[in-house]
Length: 102
Image 1 (cartoon, one colour):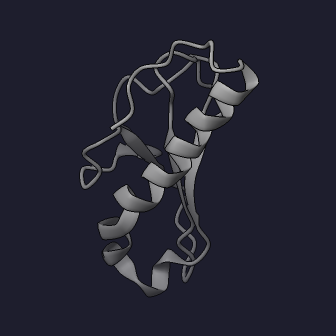
Image 2: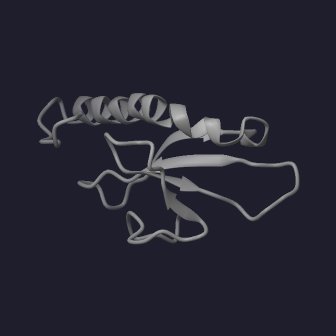
């Protein structure tokens, strides 16, 4: 992810939009195939901070639960995203104009 200049502009084998997440556009970051291992990083790119990526969710062993994992991504990612917004507001003493949160 360090080689990105911001949010990906298109899906690829490494970056795919999590379609089950409606409130925010979050991306699934994958790794090359390793038998018996499926790690998922769910990332969100704040539109007003092009040089920032928020790791909204990390799953260390998705292989055992399969695609059911994605059914709960939205609720869990939303918590991390809202926490990031609160941190930004605190850093700026509430003076940072951030987009409204869903």
